[in-house]
Length: 124
Image (cartoon, rainbow, N blue to C red):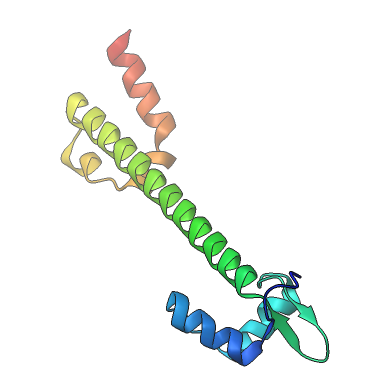
C-alpha cells in the first residue's frame, strides 16, 4: 500500500465509492467480495483498509469487464440473427411447405440433416 495515501476503513471506502463513482455496496457485499478475491486490493489490520487509488482501479476494472461482456453478448446476438436470416432465406428459396417455414431456430438447428438432404437434391 502506498504510504502517501490515507487508508480508508470499510465504511469510509463505501462512502468514497458512492460519492466518487455513484456505486452503492452493502457492507456484507464488500466483505464477500474481499473474502472471495473479487474486491479491491485491501489489507486487514484488525479491520479492512482500502486506498482510494485501489478503489478507483477496482472500479475501472469492473467497468471494463462489464463493457467487454456487453460487447460479447451483442456480437453473439448479431451472429444468431444473421444465422436465423440465412436459415429463413434457405426455407423461402426452397419453397418448403408453410409448416416447415414456421420452424423456430431450435428446430432448424436440429433439423439440419433434413435440410442438407433437401439441398443436395436441388443442387445435384
